[in-house]
Image 1 (cartoon, rainbow, N blue to C red):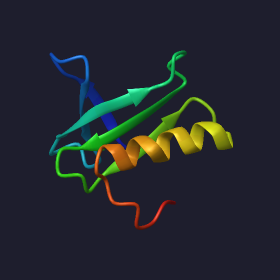
Image 2: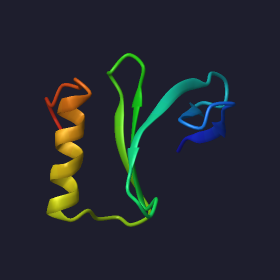
Image 3: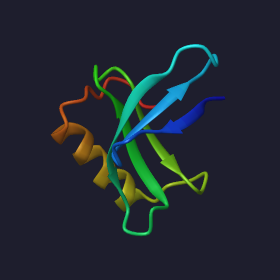
Image 4: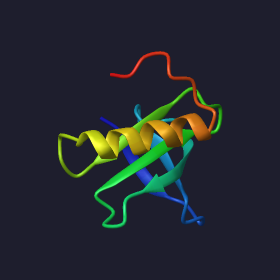
Length: 79
């Protein structure tokens, strides 16, 4: 489980998974109702689709996949 802190920038979060070291992550996109967001690391090695629900419909999934490609993240394995 991670812990997030806000930044002075509205498009950035600081997240820690060990309560010792925080890393910055950028909010790359979100839905109009803020129910889902695409969040990625500066190094393009970390990427998450965060949601208020534990599922995502096919159209929204495809929208995120296209954004991931546009942002030049590698689509090697999604889990």
